[in-house]
Image 1: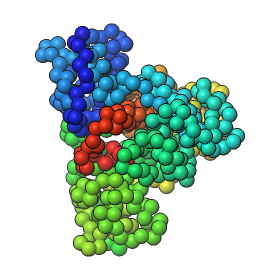
Image 2: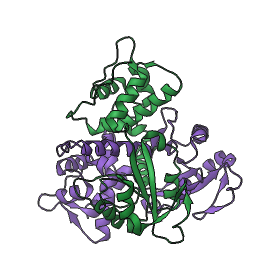
Image 3: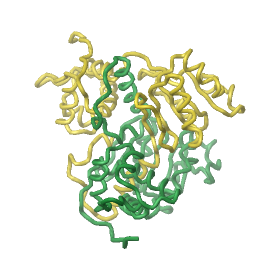
Image 4: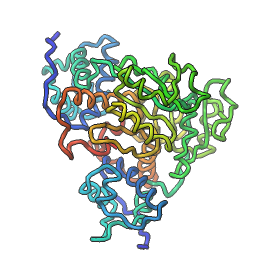
Length: 233
Length: 233
């Protein structure tokens, strides 16, 4: 295996590339589990749903160019992408809001293996506080500040009703959380140093509706390459 | 109010613009509810989290240019974006998988007002079939084909475990569904005419981890405009 060099610094990686790296990573991890040692850019691109030129460009940002006629070393590429994404260390996550969505997230199997540890669940409803969900006892939201500090939470997940989301977000930020994943249907205001990503089901559905309408109109599908494959995957 | 022209045809709208239209729409609907009649591109851009040049470019794809010194007519822009996204008609949605996630989706308040009608819930577990969730009786997955036909379902939402997702997707597609929103942690294979969008929490978390790592490294945040604001919102 190629020696593991330190992660190169100060190279800007386009945000669109960052968004595709987890898709490549998942495809590569699947190959690694099946004992596949090398992969061509064409094969990896097909599995990840992008074109191979874009894939090669994306991976070149990591300093990974593959070997002509051989392709990429699967294990090493898993390592390079994991390192780039910061998954070679564990990130501690807390979920606020333990309704159906919060429970679904807490029980989601894919975290532990991907560099994330769910350390705490919070709810404001005393009927839920004390319940065991996914092996964790639900804590009252008023303990948020203490627990974020003691557990070293760096990522806060907001799965509360819309009306509570900004208040919970403010508490996460005040307690030192610098990344927020927001499922509540509101736009959150945060200081510039805090990253927020929003998962909004109605937005995804609206994008599908656009394509449904285009199909209903009998319009030709867009040319290959026009749709960004990340958004299709 | 400006007369409502038919939706222009055959103009390609970049996929990245399509992905931002729902964000603008939500901001505009909020303004309309508060009785705001016109909005400047700068103000709308700020609320939507993009820069104003990108906003104006996006809206120009809809043939909407605003009026110098006045801005955009809020109601008309709501109409134009809704029309472009295909939200001036109702889309019928079915959800397969009525675990915590499926229940959270079924109870999600934002659908009805945004052009989506949830017509059916399916599960394979006979202990769940017959339950009432969000005003619907859960049906057995073996009725999927009949119900998709009788209800005219055009969008299938997959909230099943990973192992069942491809099978359910195949049944949706076979039954005539042409858009699939996938929450299961697998890549689905579909014919080219079917659109799939994937919501993957671990991917969102991985993108946050990238930014957390960059912050931990003490690297400067990227220049304004370098991060695509859709991906931050």
